[in-house]
Length: 462
Image 1: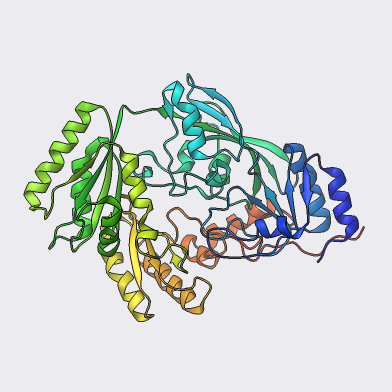
Image 2: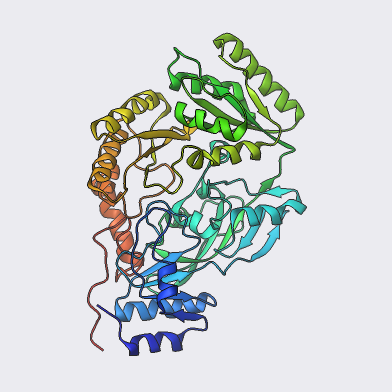
């Protein structure tokens, strides 16, 4: 139901922050990195948590959807206003409020970027190791909403492992805190874990307390050629064992991607089975031990090329980030998928992906966080097409059949909510819905995501 001029006037009068309804502002928040496009009716840039409380009260009275947005880097439409409503722009909430190196915490606003926080921690000898591929632009609030991760989650885990507290305003307008500054606690069911990964459907995040770690002395990147005649899954496990406790990332790029990255790296990476990209972190002694184990593996497996060493691991990840442009696919329509299976099922999934592509006559490139069984098949097809829908359905079927999950890190968003019943089963899914109804009784928070059936009903009579 469209909002009236009186509705917008009432909202504007209730806010200390900014409300915009002009076309330029609305267009700027209509899409995210998924390629999905919605229509925002208004954009609010709140001044503080009090604005969030007022906004929720107004949205409940008018049955207006509210969609939280950080940097718009989400890949499954999490920040797209698919059912209209108001987009809450948190990008200006970008202050690091406090760094406590003794307790190992940082208190931040939701619009703070990953790399901005890591730079702020450097003088304290600390680091925030969560490094999504969009780490140069994505925000901690968005990371918490989607439980984002990246290459270094191989050792350090996803965002969920690094959030100690969230200050939130839920869909009832209640303001509360989950978690705390402590390093450990055992005080009942974990509300914090429930909020992380909820994609803005249960509450709006107004402040985060994150855990920080000691900054390692060294982070070294490695490129390991994949030999012929060895199942990739088995070789991944061998490399993981060789990396040992120093291993902090273990990635895969397929043959076509490896050949394309040659031009970026200036190296001949044209092996017929792709490459493993790894990272080790720690001190000189640990690095020497890990490299010795890898060289022994290289000799035992008669690798076709030497293991390449990058003294600065970030340079390797820059090269890896150039995969899209190097393949000539940057900006081209693509279905950028994300599934995860147990490591023992990797080879079965890797065999099924090209079969899916062949059945639908589309090209596919595969890379991802293979050390965790998390692959990103990129199918060269318009993600909004019927072909893309069928490709995604078959990939989801394969992941579930192999005992995996429909998303390893990108989230559910608007692209996979119909798979949630199959993922969790009817009893657990019914409990999910009861939680949603408790925290968001009017269905105003990010409708169409995770719970596609939840959406605002008609506005109550005045």
